[in-house]
Image (cartoon, rainbow, N blue to C red):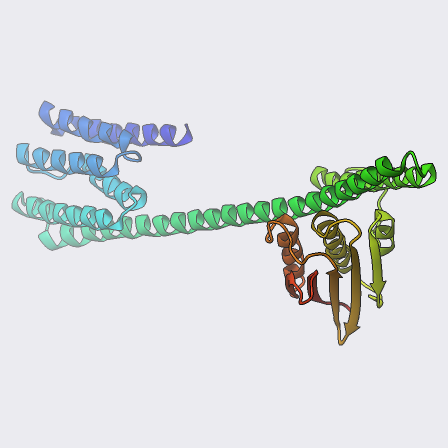
Length: 354
Protein backbone atom coordinates (compact mmCIF):
# COMPACT_ATOMS: atom_id res chain seq x y z
CA UNK A 1 0.00 0.00 0.00
CA UNK A 2 2.85 2.39 0.81
CA UNK A 3 4.41 1.75 -2.62
CA UNK A 4 1.10 2.36 -4.39
CA UNK A 5 0.57 5.61 -2.53
CA UNK A 6 4.11 6.70 -3.38
CA UNK A 7 3.57 5.94 -7.08
CA UNK A 8 0.22 7.75 -7.05
CA UNK A 9 1.86 10.81 -5.48
CA UNK A 10 4.62 10.70 -8.11
CA UNK A 11 2.07 10.54 -10.94
CA UNK A 12 0.20 13.46 -9.39
CA UNK A 13 3.41 15.52 -9.34
CA UNK A 14 4.13 14.70 -12.98
CA UNK A 15 0.57 15.69 -13.97
CA UNK A 16 1.00 18.93 -12.06
CA UNK A 17 4.16 19.67 -14.06
CA UNK A 18 2.28 18.86 -17.25
CA UNK A 19 -0.61 21.21 -16.56
CA UNK A 20 1.72 23.99 -15.48
CA UNK A 21 2.67 24.13 -19.17
CA UNK A 22 -0.87 23.77 -20.51
CA UNK A 23 -0.79 27.28 -22.00
CA UNK A 24 2.20 26.22 -24.11
CA UNK A 25 0.84 22.85 -25.20
CA UNK A 26 -2.09 21.90 -27.42
CA UNK A 27 -4.68 19.32 -26.32
CA UNK A 28 -2.93 16.36 -28.03
CA UNK A 29 0.24 17.04 -26.04
CA UNK A 30 -1.77 17.14 -22.79
CA UNK A 31 -3.41 13.80 -23.66
CA UNK A 32 -0.06 12.20 -24.52
CA UNK A 33 1.56 13.56 -21.34
CA UNK A 34 -1.33 12.31 -19.22
CA UNK A 35 -0.99 8.82 -20.74
CA UNK A 36 2.76 8.86 -20.04
CA UNK A 37 2.16 9.77 -16.41
CA UNK A 38 -0.58 7.17 -15.88
CA UNK A 39 1.65 4.43 -17.28
CA UNK A 40 3.96 4.95 -14.32
CA UNK A 41 1.35 3.46 -11.98
CA UNK A 42 2.38 0.02 -13.32
CA UNK A 43 6.13 0.60 -13.34
CA UNK A 44 6.92 -1.82 -10.49
CA UNK A 45 4.96 -4.78 -11.82
CA UNK A 46 5.66 -4.29 -15.55
CA UNK A 47 8.81 -2.13 -15.85
CA UNK A 48 9.76 -3.07 -19.43
CA UNK A 49 6.26 -2.65 -21.00
CA UNK A 50 5.84 0.63 -19.12
CA UNK A 51 9.21 1.88 -20.35
CA UNK A 52 8.36 0.89 -23.93
CA UNK A 53 5.02 2.74 -23.72
CA UNK A 54 6.56 5.86 -22.17
CA UNK A 55 9.41 5.94 -24.70
CA UNK A 56 6.96 5.52 -27.56
CA UNK A 57 4.63 8.23 -26.29
CA UNK A 58 7.61 10.57 -25.84
CA UNK A 59 8.56 10.06 -29.49
CA UNK A 60 4.95 10.74 -30.56
CA UNK A 61 4.92 13.89 -28.45
CA UNK A 62 8.06 15.22 -30.15
CA UNK A 63 6.62 14.33 -33.54
CA UNK A 64 3.40 16.28 -32.80
CA UNK A 65 5.24 19.36 -31.58
CA UNK A 66 9.05 19.33 -31.38
CA UNK A 67 9.87 20.54 -27.89
CA UNK A 68 11.22 19.18 -24.60
CA UNK A 69 8.68 19.40 -21.79
CA UNK A 70 8.76 18.79 -18.05
CA UNK A 71 6.52 15.74 -18.45
CA UNK A 72 9.45 14.05 -20.22
CA UNK A 73 10.75 13.27 -16.74
CA UNK A 74 8.57 10.15 -17.17
CA UNK A 75 11.32 8.75 -19.40
CA UNK A 76 13.82 8.94 -16.54
CA UNK A 77 11.36 7.38 -14.09
CA UNK A 78 10.60 4.53 -16.50
CA UNK A 79 14.31 3.91 -17.08
CA UNK A 80 14.93 3.91 -13.30
CA UNK A 81 12.18 1.34 -12.79
CA UNK A 82 13.59 -1.06 -15.39
CA UNK A 83 17.09 -0.92 -13.93
CA UNK A 84 15.86 -1.38 -10.37
CA UNK A 85 13.03 -3.88 -10.66
CA UNK A 86 13.70 -6.15 -13.62
CA UNK A 87 15.46 -9.42 -12.84
CA UNK A 88 17.87 -9.12 -15.79
CA UNK A 89 20.25 -6.19 -15.93
CA UNK A 90 20.34 -6.48 -19.72
CA UNK A 91 16.94 -4.79 -19.90
CA UNK A 92 18.27 -2.00 -17.69
CA UNK A 93 21.11 -1.45 -20.15
CA UNK A 94 18.62 -1.41 -23.02
CA UNK A 95 16.48 1.11 -21.14
CA UNK A 96 19.56 3.24 -20.53
CA UNK A 97 20.38 3.13 -24.25
CA UNK A 98 16.83 4.24 -25.07
CA UNK A 99 17.11 7.13 -22.62
CA UNK A 100 20.47 8.10 -24.16
CA UNK A 101 18.79 8.22 -27.56
CA UNK A 102 16.14 10.44 -26.00
CA UNK A 103 18.86 12.78 -24.73
CA UNK A 104 20.24 13.05 -28.27
CA UNK A 105 16.76 13.76 -29.67
CA UNK A 106 16.12 16.41 -27.02
CA UNK A 107 19.44 18.12 -27.80
CA UNK A 108 18.68 18.15 -31.54
CA UNK A 109 15.14 19.45 -30.96
CA UNK A 110 16.37 22.30 -28.75
CA UNK A 111 19.17 23.13 -31.14
CA UNK A 112 16.84 23.29 -34.19
CA UNK A 113 14.29 25.38 -32.30
CA UNK A 114 17.00 27.92 -31.41
CA UNK A 115 16.00 27.76 -27.73
CA UNK A 116 19.21 26.18 -26.53
CA UNK A 117 22.70 25.04 -27.43
CA UNK A 118 23.06 21.44 -28.61
CA UNK A 119 26.06 20.69 -26.40
CA UNK A 120 24.61 22.43 -23.36
CA UNK A 121 21.39 20.47 -23.53
CA UNK A 122 23.20 17.25 -24.42
CA UNK A 123 25.68 17.55 -21.54
CA UNK A 124 23.20 18.68 -18.87
CA UNK A 125 20.39 16.28 -19.73
CA UNK A 126 22.91 13.52 -20.41
CA UNK A 127 24.52 14.02 -16.99
CA UNK A 128 21.12 13.89 -15.28
CA UNK A 129 20.20 10.72 -17.18
CA UNK A 130 23.51 9.03 -16.32
CA UNK A 131 23.10 9.99 -12.66
CA UNK A 132 19.60 8.53 -12.55
CA UNK A 133 20.79 5.29 -14.19
CA UNK A 134 23.73 4.98 -11.77
CA UNK A 135 21.46 5.63 -8.79
CA UNK A 136 19.04 2.94 -9.98
CA UNK A 137 21.91 0.48 -10.43
CA UNK A 138 23.19 1.22 -6.93
CA UNK A 139 19.75 0.66 -5.41
CA UNK A 140 19.34 -2.52 -7.44
CA UNK A 141 22.68 -3.87 -6.22
CA UNK A 142 21.83 -3.14 -2.60
CA UNK A 143 18.37 -4.70 -2.97
CA UNK A 144 19.82 -7.89 -4.47
CA UNK A 145 22.48 -8.02 -1.74
CA UNK A 146 19.86 -7.75 0.98
CA UNK A 147 17.76 -10.38 -0.76
CA UNK A 148 20.75 -12.74 -0.86
CA UNK A 149 21.39 -12.17 2.85
CA UNK A 150 17.76 -12.91 3.65
CA UNK A 151 17.88 -16.07 1.55
CA UNK A 152 21.07 -17.18 3.30
CA UNK A 153 19.45 -16.45 6.68
CA UNK A 154 16.39 -18.51 5.75
CA UNK A 155 18.60 -21.35 4.51
CA UNK A 156 20.57 -21.36 7.77
CA UNK A 157 17.31 -21.36 9.71
CA UNK A 158 16.10 -24.38 7.73
CA UNK A 159 19.39 -26.21 8.33
CA UNK A 160 19.24 -25.44 12.05
CA UNK A 161 15.65 -26.67 12.19
CA UNK A 162 16.67 -29.88 10.40
CA UNK A 163 19.52 -30.40 12.87
CA UNK A 164 17.14 -29.84 15.78
CA UNK A 165 14.65 -32.34 14.35
CA UNK A 166 17.43 -34.90 13.89
CA UNK A 167 18.64 -34.38 17.47
CA UNK A 168 15.12 -34.73 18.84
CA UNK A 169 14.57 -37.87 16.75
CA UNK A 170 17.77 -39.36 18.18
CA UNK A 171 16.73 -38.59 21.73
CA UNK A 172 13.24 -40.00 21.27
CA UNK A 173 14.58 -43.13 19.60
CA UNK A 174 17.16 -43.69 22.33
CA UNK A 175 14.63 -43.23 25.11
CA UNK A 176 11.69 -45.13 23.64
CA UNK A 177 13.48 -47.95 21.83
CA UNK A 178 15.74 -48.87 24.72
CA UNK A 179 13.07 -48.60 27.41
CA UNK A 180 10.48 -50.57 25.44
CA UNK A 181 13.02 -53.29 24.63
CA UNK A 182 13.88 -53.68 28.31
CA UNK A 183 10.23 -53.67 29.36
CA UNK A 184 9.28 -56.27 26.73
CA UNK A 185 12.12 -58.59 27.76
CA UNK A 186 11.23 -58.25 31.44
CA UNK A 187 7.52 -58.74 30.77
CA UNK A 188 8.22 -61.92 28.80
CA UNK A 189 10.43 -63.18 31.61
CA UNK A 190 7.84 -62.37 34.25
CA UNK A 191 5.13 -64.20 32.30
CA UNK A 192 7.41 -67.20 32.01
CA UNK A 193 8.22 -67.52 35.74
CA UNK A 194 5.07 -66.09 37.30
CA UNK A 195 3.88 -69.55 38.33
CA UNK A 196 7.18 -71.16 39.26
CA UNK A 197 9.06 -68.23 40.79
CA UNK A 198 6.83 -65.39 42.00
CA UNK A 199 9.86 -63.58 43.48
CA UNK A 200 11.61 -63.40 40.10
CA UNK A 201 8.36 -62.28 38.48
CA UNK A 202 8.01 -59.56 41.09
CA UNK A 203 11.61 -58.44 40.46
CA UNK A 204 10.93 -58.27 36.72
CA UNK A 205 7.83 -56.17 37.35
CA UNK A 206 9.84 -53.82 39.55
CA UNK A 207 12.39 -53.47 36.75
CA UNK A 208 9.59 -52.69 34.29
CA UNK A 209 8.25 -50.00 36.61
CA UNK A 210 11.70 -48.47 37.18
CA UNK A 211 12.44 -48.47 33.45
CA UNK A 212 9.10 -46.84 32.71
CA UNK A 213 9.74 -44.09 35.27
CA UNK A 214 13.21 -43.45 33.88
CA UNK A 215 11.82 -43.31 30.33
CA UNK A 216 9.13 -40.87 31.47
CA UNK A 217 11.77 -38.64 33.06
CA UNK A 218 13.86 -38.69 29.89
CA UNK A 219 10.76 -37.93 27.84
CA UNK A 220 10.03 -34.91 30.03
CA UNK A 221 13.58 -33.72 29.51
CA UNK A 222 13.20 -33.93 25.72
CA UNK A 223 9.84 -32.16 25.85
CA UNK A 224 11.38 -29.46 28.04
CA UNK A 225 13.85 -28.72 25.25
CA UNK A 226 10.95 -28.38 22.82
CA UNK A 227 9.01 -26.06 25.11
CA UNK A 228 11.98 -23.76 25.61
CA UNK A 229 14.11 -22.62 28.55
CA UNK A 230 11.07 -21.47 30.51
CA UNK A 231 9.66 -24.99 30.82
CA UNK A 232 9.71 -26.51 34.29
CA UNK A 233 10.75 -30.12 34.61
CA UNK A 234 10.06 -32.04 37.77
CA UNK A 235 13.31 -33.94 37.71
CA UNK A 236 16.50 -33.33 35.78
CA UNK A 237 19.01 -36.11 36.00
CA UNK A 238 22.20 -36.89 34.17
CA UNK A 239 22.06 -40.47 32.88
CA UNK A 240 24.73 -42.79 34.26
CA UNK A 241 26.01 -46.12 33.02
CA UNK A 242 25.10 -47.61 36.39
CA UNK A 243 21.43 -46.97 35.55
CA UNK A 244 21.66 -49.53 32.74
CA UNK A 245 22.46 -52.40 35.09
CA UNK A 246 18.75 -52.85 35.85
CA UNK A 247 17.77 -53.61 32.26
CA UNK A 248 17.76 -57.38 32.70
CA UNK A 249 20.61 -57.88 30.21
CA UNK A 250 23.85 -59.48 31.28
CA UNK A 251 25.96 -56.34 31.10
CA UNK A 252 29.59 -56.12 32.08
CA UNK A 253 31.53 -52.85 32.00
CA UNK A 254 35.33 -52.84 32.11
CA UNK A 255 37.46 -49.74 32.51
CA UNK A 256 36.63 -46.22 33.61
CA UNK A 257 35.55 -43.27 31.55
CA UNK A 258 36.91 -40.78 34.08
CA UNK A 259 35.59 -37.27 34.46
CA UNK A 260 33.46 -36.24 31.47
CA UNK A 261 31.52 -33.20 30.43
CA UNK A 262 27.74 -33.40 30.32
CA UNK A 263 27.61 -33.81 26.52
CA UNK A 264 30.39 -36.41 26.53
CA UNK A 265 28.76 -38.37 29.32
CA UNK A 266 25.43 -38.37 27.51
CA UNK A 267 27.07 -39.59 24.29
CA UNK A 268 28.79 -42.48 26.08
CA UNK A 269 25.53 -43.37 27.83
CA UNK A 270 23.55 -43.38 24.58
CA UNK A 271 26.13 -45.51 22.76
CA UNK A 272 26.07 -48.17 25.48
CA UNK A 273 22.28 -47.91 25.76
CA UNK A 274 21.75 -48.41 22.02
CA UNK A 275 24.21 -51.32 22.03
CA UNK A 276 22.13 -52.92 24.78
CA UNK A 277 18.95 -52.29 22.79
CA UNK A 278 20.43 -54.02 19.73
CA UNK A 279 21.58 -56.93 21.90
CA UNK A 280 18.12 -57.33 23.43
CA UNK A 281 16.48 -57.20 20.02
CA UNK A 282 18.79 -59.22 17.82
CA UNK A 283 21.30 -61.25 19.87
CA UNK A 284 18.77 -63.74 21.17
CA UNK A 285 17.85 -65.01 24.63
CA UNK A 286 20.67 -65.29 27.13
CA UNK A 287 23.02 -62.99 25.22
CA UNK A 288 25.40 -60.76 27.14
CA UNK A 289 27.16 -57.51 26.39
CA UNK A 290 30.72 -56.55 27.27
CA UNK A 291 31.57 -52.85 27.32
CA UNK A 292 35.18 -51.68 27.50
CA UNK A 293 36.11 -48.08 28.24
CA UNK A 294 39.68 -47.03 27.47
CA UNK A 295 40.83 -43.47 28.03
CA UNK A 296 44.20 -42.18 26.89
CA UNK A 297 45.70 -38.97 25.48
CA UNK A 298 42.46 -37.03 25.57
CA UNK A 299 40.48 -39.75 23.78
CA UNK A 300 37.88 -42.16 25.11
CA UNK A 301 37.35 -45.43 23.25
CA UNK A 302 34.04 -47.27 23.79
CA UNK A 303 33.83 -50.87 22.61
CA UNK A 304 30.57 -52.79 23.07
CA UNK A 305 30.60 -56.46 22.00
CA UNK A 306 27.78 -58.97 22.40
CA UNK A 307 27.96 -62.75 22.03
CA UNK A 308 24.99 -63.09 19.70
CA UNK A 309 24.95 -64.44 16.12
CA UNK A 310 26.70 -61.37 14.77
CA UNK A 311 23.95 -59.66 12.81
CA UNK A 312 21.70 -56.69 13.36
CA UNK A 313 18.44 -56.61 11.45
CA UNK A 314 18.32 -53.55 9.21
CA UNK A 315 21.99 -52.87 9.83
CA UNK A 316 21.85 -49.10 9.28
CA UNK A 317 18.71 -48.44 11.29
CA UNK A 318 17.89 -45.38 13.37
CA UNK A 319 19.95 -46.62 16.30
CA UNK A 320 23.26 -46.95 14.42
CA UNK A 321 22.61 -43.74 12.51
CA UNK A 322 21.96 -41.93 15.79
CA UNK A 323 25.19 -43.26 17.34
CA UNK A 324 27.16 -42.27 14.25
CA UNK A 325 25.73 -38.74 14.35
CA UNK A 326 26.43 -38.34 18.07
CA UNK A 327 30.05 -39.37 17.63
CA UNK A 328 30.43 -37.11 14.59
CA UNK A 329 29.26 -34.11 16.63
CA UNK A 330 32.28 -34.63 18.90
CA UNK A 331 34.66 -35.12 15.97
CA UNK A 332 35.19 -38.80 16.77
CA UNK A 333 35.11 -42.05 14.79
CA UNK A 334 32.50 -44.80 14.71
CA UNK A 335 32.33 -48.34 13.35
CA UNK A 336 29.91 -51.22 13.83
CA UNK A 337 29.73 -54.73 12.43
CA UNK A 338 30.03 -58.46 13.12
CA UNK A 339 33.20 -59.87 14.67
CA UNK A 340 35.03 -63.11 13.98
CA UNK A 341 33.66 -66.03 15.95
CA UNK A 342 30.19 -64.52 16.31
CA UNK A 343 28.90 -61.41 17.95
CA UNK A 344 28.31 -57.79 17.04
CA UNK A 345 30.66 -54.99 17.98
CA UNK A 346 30.25 -51.26 18.20
CA UNK A 347 33.41 -49.18 18.51
CA UNK A 348 33.52 -45.42 18.96
CA UNK A 349 36.25 -42.98 19.90
CA UNK A 350 35.55 -39.43 20.98
CA UNK A 351 37.86 -36.62 22.11
CA UNK A 352 37.23 -35.76 25.76
CA UNK A 353 38.13 -32.83 27.94
CA UNK A 354 41.01 -33.01 30.36
